Image (cartoon, rainbow, N blue to C red):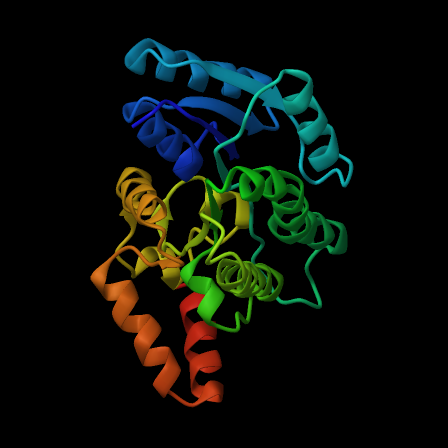
Length: 260
């Protein structure tokens, strides 16, 4: 495969970092985006040292509404062509909506939803013009459910999935594909940051490694799949959700989100 360049947001840790390794293992250059320069540079150094690809880092906080445009402008100023866009950056927050912090939730919507839309809007036209390109939006199995005790996070992932499927259909004859990666519980810093590490979702569930999720997602993206759900158990649960009464699904989701 001809060497191309992948831009990965949240690319210094977790699923984003493992996706970066997947692209690098297949010979692609990288542009990694995250909030912390030190972590970014450490990740870039490891990948360059092992795979011999070019890794450029850019520090942006996507909770800042101006960051997507600034990022796009910085990419253009460097003359970098982005062939693969991976909208991976995101975070969650557990708790009852009446008690949770509003600013944190507004920042979550900015990162999980608005930045995904904004970056896709900016990078997509050039891909369509070239009649080639792939986009991955990292959603979650949460995208299929209402989410009591994590209502805003689940809602943002609902949006990401619906948005991805919609534009994938619009783009089906353009040569550009869009994939929603929907992992279940995964070994990252998500649970600790969101305050859900003691919930049944993480204590009673099979927790996948970030590496296996990334490998599955990378393969699905390259095949042009619209929705990629790692793990047979997760796939089964997604099918069961469609058959169960909505109120029952909501009740069960709450139980899963509660602490043991």
